[in-house]
Image 1 (cartoon, helix red, strand yellow):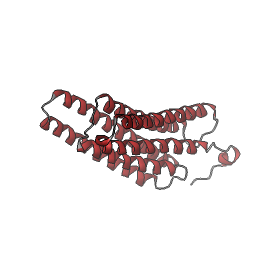
Image 2 (cartoon, one colour; image 1 turned 135 degrees about the vertical axis):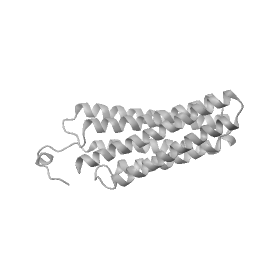
Image 3 (cartoon, rainbow, N blue to C red; image 1 turned 90 degrees about the vertical axis):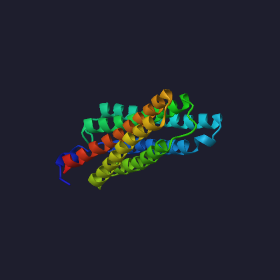
Image 4 (cartoon, rainbow, N blue to C red; image 1 turned 180 degrees about the horizontal axis):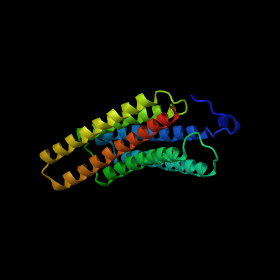
Length: 214
């Protein structure tokens, strides 16, 4: 790591690493809740479904508060440990992950989907895997350790999600003759795929940070 006299004379606020770790932990928890939900929804009562939905809502609310805190602190902090734009982009995209997860959960509730297609469960498993690796890469951000390898791993999972998305749409159109069902599940698959894109975006930004610092 390069020696910089300014780092000693003007210490940087390392609290942002803590905040980002807390934010990504909220998303990882929400992803696991979602994964548990899609695998068990066929056995849940309406009251249990409501409880599961509230869990995701609470995670999203916690994530919003953490995002607002980070943005406020960016505005008040003179020297940040990373470029302000990078911190801003990372926190916005983690928040977008939570927003998308909540929107998917609400669509499932609105459409009264109680039998999950296998591919939605596959997507959910993949999202949990990506969330765990996202948590790992954010936790390694301060030390700049294993960043490139973790970022590439996340991107490989995102490519896998792209393939699953196209397979899912193909199967949906070929196997369903109900236009309403096609519209409902197409929307869910699109949001799931956007969620994996947002996770990958965070990984790419962090890889870019690693390149900047050398």
